[in-house]
Image 1 (cartoon, rainbow, N blue to C red):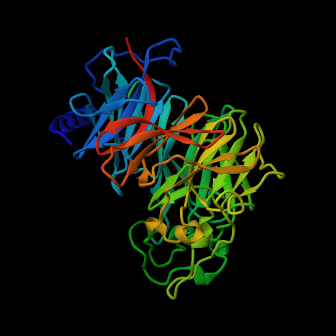
Image 2: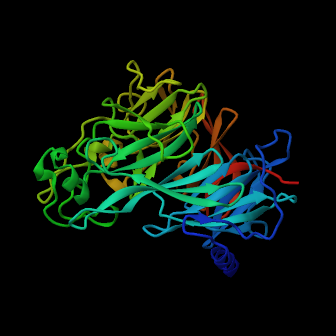
Image 3: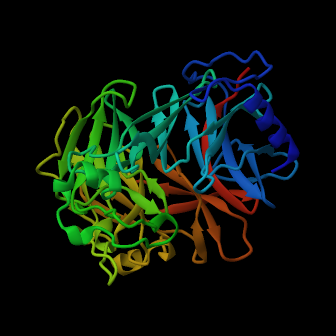
Length: 463
């Protein structure tokens, strides 16, 4: 990162208020923006990286042409994730592994150039999303509550990043026994639909604090770790239950207000396992609303990866990768809807997924099936397919390059198609491919003169 970004970050910290609220010291008079004007000038904004530096660049189309970061791109904070908000801003969110997260927001100035607006610092990220005029980050971490033995209760930690004022508020709620089964939880993805917020609740076993408070929730004492073990995001300590005792059930929390402090409606099903994509400590969103307001909930069937060893017993799941549905306005899963992805299409489990349009969804699959999924962080996920949720059919995506190496971050949907950044193993530059929702055919579009591309979206030019 260049010196200028460090300087701006330092100035932003000098302007910070309390730990719970951060406001920007921007010296411009840029006013908060309303919802995008459909007649206003817009441009596609692409997040790319070259020679260790991250850039935002613009292009008039994602269907054709070439765009370059060299001499035209705006140097930005290198985001692990990019969130486009109401065509007003794009947020860069930096994971920073186990450390605190950092972020920034950008808009298009009157000249159509990406311009920094606000900088943020917040708790580490394991998931993220939007809620009203806020971008929200989520993680599970230590609370301020301890028991008599000094064991620390776990909490869900939130940061609300205001798109208009640059304000930042923090919040937390108990993660312990959230589902009434004694386990701590995390959230995976935030989906706004039907005037509500839906989030997948992922159980993560029992902490020392949880076992002390709810010992009757331990289903088998052999599940309690006798010694420290694991590594990185899979590490655990003695006296805990490191993985869930309920791998073959999914939960969704439904919020009707504007804060996680309220009590949600929680719905569950045993047709699928818990609903999230997973890579190391990151939990990817796999709950999405169709255009008619129905919510579709996807599960990779990760419970099958919880296998016992000589040192640690685990509850191993049996549920395959599947999808279920919550009808618009309902507070229960549709009893008549279920899809088993391992019986249709290429019969491979889902890794990640996104809504395209209507009831069509783009699926990123484990290329080597269940056996590949069992490889964890080394699994190959270079297969795409389109899922028609109403017809319950899966169509493999065709037209991708034969030397495909991988994909960027979040794809971008528009006019019944999905654009996704594709990299290859040869010398060609990364490019966006446009995937037709009905046919599943991919067509090469805009080429990016950079080493890698994360994502794209659309922003309105602010006159």
